[in-house]
Amino acid sequence: MLSKIPGFQEFEKHMKDSNFSYNSCEAYKKDIDDFFIFIRYKPLNEIIEMDILNFIKDLKKVYSNNSINRKIISIRGYLKYFYKNGIINSLPMENIKNLPPEKRTLEILSSDEIERLREVMDNSPKEYRDRIILDILYSTGILISEVLDLRCEDIISEDYKAIIQIKGIKINKIPLDDSLSERLQIFIEEKRDFLRNKNTKIFSSVSRQNYRARLIKYAKRADLGREIYTHMIRNTVLKNILDTEGAHVVKDRMGYSTIQNTSLYSSRNTEQIKKIYMEIGIGDE
Image (tube, rainbow, N blue to C red; front, side, top):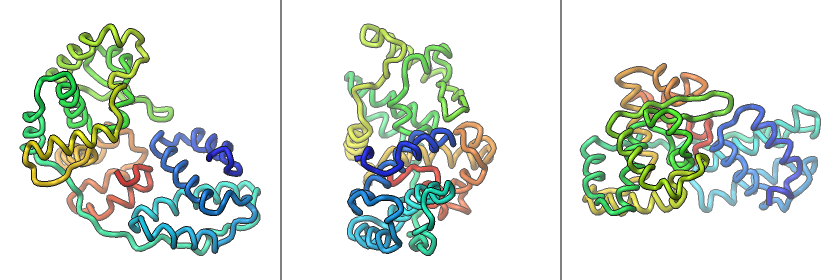
C-alpha cells in the first residue's frame, strides 16, 4: 500500500514537480511499493544495504537483470531524494551497482506485417475499433497507454487533423494523415451518444492488457509466426523516423527531453534500448 510507505506523498509531489511522465511515475510507484512490501514498511532511517541486497536476491527468482535494474533505479532515486534533503543520514544504495544488462535486439515490425495485421481485422465494431487503435499507434508512435487515454477533446479541438498530447509542461501536437483523420472522425461521430462529454475517453472499454491479448490473436490469424506486442509498433515508427529524418525529429515529435533518449533507435545503437527504456520509465512492455 502506497499510503504505508514513509514519505511517499512527498516523493510523488517531487516527481510531478520534476515533470516525470505518467508512465515514469507509475513505474516508480510499483517498484517502490514492491520494495517496501518486501521490507515490511521499515522506517526510512532503518533501511540498510542488506535489505536492498536481499530484495535483489529475491527478485532474481522471477525477473530478468534488466527488470531488476529498473527497480534498483527507482529505489535509488527514492532514497537519494531523502538523503539529499537531509531526511536520512546515509545512503544504503551507495555501494549497490546495477546488474550486467542483458543484450537484446530491437524488435520491430515490417510494413508488410503491419498491413497483414490490418487485413485480418474485419469490420465488426470491436475489430474496426482495434484497427483504428493500430493505425494511431503506427501513425504516431505514441504509447498504447497514451492512445487509450485519448479524450474527444484531444482530437476534436484540432479538427481531427492532430492529437494534442500534454507531457509535463510541454504540449505536443502530433499530426494525423488524411485517411486516419477521416476514419477517426467517422468513428467518433458514430459513438456520439456515448461521447457526449468532451473529456470522455474514446477507447474507454479497452485496457492495455486486453488490447495486447487481441493483438496476439490477430498476429496468429495473420500467420506472422511470432508473438507481438504494442511496443514493437512504437519501435518501428521511431526507428523509421530516426533513420529517415534524424534524432531531432524524434525528439520534437515524441517530446523526449534529450537527444540521448533517441539514440537507441539508431541501427548502430540498438544495444542501448533497455538502458534508456528504464531511464524514461517504460518498463518491460
